[in-house]
Length: 270
Image (cartoon, rainbow, N blue to C red; front, side, top):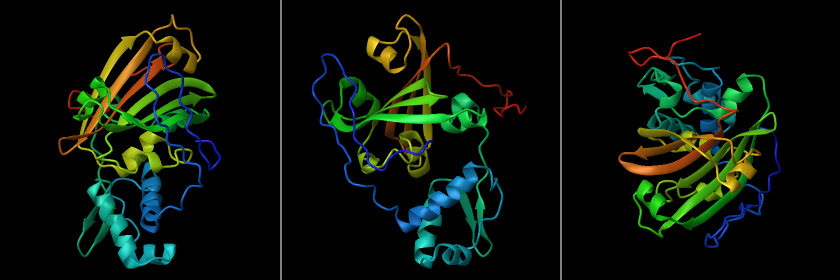
């Protein structure tokens, strides 16, 4: 993701016949990341970038204490939360190791769009248009198992490949599951990546539809409203409680959804 200013102003895209919403703007500079979160982020990045692979042994607690200049208790909390998120496993008296990945196809997992674009050698950028607290519509309330009108978090982002929009991400988040969502600085970490890194989930639902964009959606995607789109609707749960529902709209002429995998569910390499 390209560097962006540390101050963020929430900008709500215009909507017709929609009640006014209170937009939460984070005007103050982003607070420094908590010490244990720095350790988590350090380890997560090395795993995500492939520097540490499944089965690799992580530095010991003592090594991390020395490296970051923090207490053993702080390091222990970071490792404990990574275990809870399924990223690492700890073996008593032996050490901590990168957890084995569960094989699954692109459509069955949450793909990292930024990584996909950068792996193609292209430039990636995420424009965060809206971060707000709003009232759940009937559709959103049903998706998140809330009451209609109950408070939810909402974000709207445009993902770009070499400057061209390839995805409009319209997300609603259950505040009971992610109470700090609107307090994040999404110029540093876009919403999807923040949720994957910090909120453990155990169920995913993906539904793909062919749709025509609204005039507003077409304008945001810089495309003709007469061109079709692919809509990926995703929901995630933790222990049966919904975390988020997101509608990812892709111009069909610029983006494809698909994967190749064997009958046993393992992806085909190469």
